[in-house]
Length: 289
Image 1 (tube, rainbow, N blue to C red):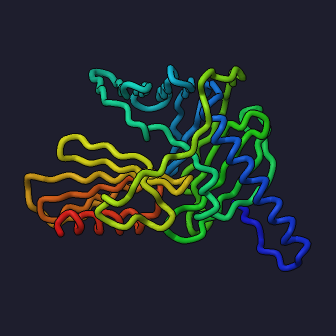
Image 2: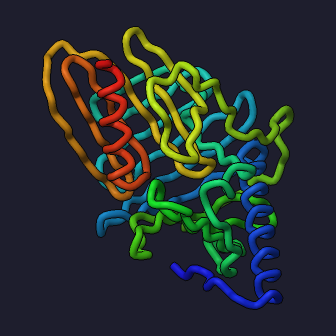
Image 3: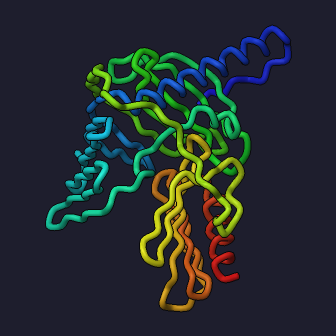
């Protein structure tokens, strides 16, 4: 991933500011496109030295839905609308209530707080022109991202998560795409809603805000976002008493599970392992205070 070099002259500094403004405009267009554009296509997910292909169907609006079907490996289908999320695989099916935070929503207005934006290049993805936006993390709490956005329809054509040594941790890219240009009636672009954080047991990672919450019996699910990256934090009591930390990784997605006594905190997100572990440790400790 090519990051823009910090330039010293006043003239080139001005050009950099224009580039950042262009990048913000592209992110704003991507945020709006999620609410009003209908599309379907094939996406390739590259991670851990392997490739997975899925077919994606997206229909926005109040009656909209999303369907994701695997094209490689075990056949699986995920269907999600306003009422439920359904996961189907050979021999089994699972139905879950749809959560308001199930679909990722960018908040272009907040991205600049945690990332330095750069309009980096122009490329071509799945037959569409793409402007490349580099969102360079301002700290080590989150990963940098590279986003490919079509300047005409605003659709996000691909995204890569970049590690601290500028290595690609994972990449998701359309290889084929069909766009229905009709505007969905009643659909409107919206930023992630910020919820009151007064009842949170811990301080959130820098730049992250609570955007959704669900309570299911004694289990509490919290979704946090910095405008690009998202973290889900699960808080739940356990019958057994342990002092244990478990971590797992798939691509750039980290899972950190910390049980302290009879309370467990689980963090899942495309963030550095240190961020996930720190949040899980602090949440578990807070549940026991």
